Image 1 (cartoon, rainbow, N blue to C red):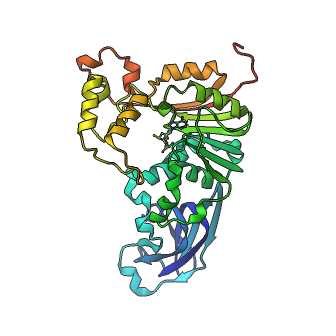
Image 2: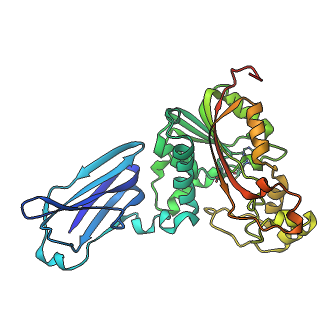
Image 3: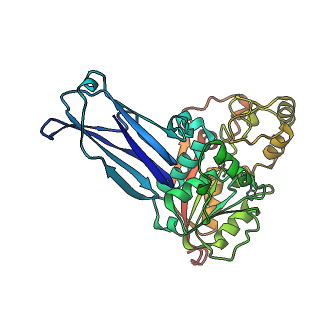
Length: 373
Ligand SMILES: C[S@@+](CC[C@H](N)C(=O)[O-])C[C@H]1O[C@@H](n2cnc3c(N)ncnc32)[C@H](O)[C@@H]1O
């Protein structure tokens, strides 16, 4: 037995629902979630799909499929009429499988969080909008992403929260690869909608008037602003409306991953253990083990430059900066290492800095308040 599903929207999220089994009289005898049957999908782009049911457990004579999905933040649903089941299907165990174009079995999330597109389109967007910003109504307003890179996270934010405007800025314009990234994954070009704008611009000099945005986000970028991120923070404060929200996820320099040199070494805290010269030698003489970065490849010399430009952000210093600029913490999440094994080189560093792997923070911009109050 099969159901056809045509998706006209550029993308739907959290595609799931229930398979309802009924007896000859039409009384419900069981209900199975699509997740339980392995048929729940993180998202489905525009396309034509088929959902095939095989087998049946128990005494079901009829079956109904209730599908639900998120179109932006709104839930939508459909329910099929009752289908009588052919006798022969009763022998096999129950299973549901999707097929279609693009092939749901080949969509990026099938590879889990190691897939770069999925990690940004789904995971990062949800961490920002749902986990930290808690579905704030401000997300339907005007959003700025400072240091947006390839823009995949912005795509996820845009299609989940449907803001009036989302602007991603980056001086190195990685977002120019976005149309190719979509095409390579069989995703519709219509995901690049008019309200989603990318600009080549420097976070230190934002080309916007003051109070232009309801929300500013920055994921893994503040640590990369050469010469320090303070000026960019001042700019964020300026362009963010009073009582607007800032989400920041700055890389923590003294953490295990703080070096961003995973392509060259697996040694924990390699950047704190080796001398600058030894580290430079390691980077420049090693062939990088490129990880999936949605098609971005850089030379060892470029990696070394990025390492040298890193800002040594810590949780304590970042909190101090936020407060000094009148950002009021609203929600914070830290990820810590299970345990730190000291070696002599690590003894000089703060326990807290070594053990804190990641920082996610949401703050209100209270810039009207005179400093010190
Ligand atoms: C590790 S990437 C993160 C990109 C993206 N947010 C993501 O999660 O994939 C760091 C980004 O910071 C950007 N960056 C470096 N200097 C910057 C500056 N002065 N202003 C804004 N962004 C900057 C880089 O171009 C790069 O795209």
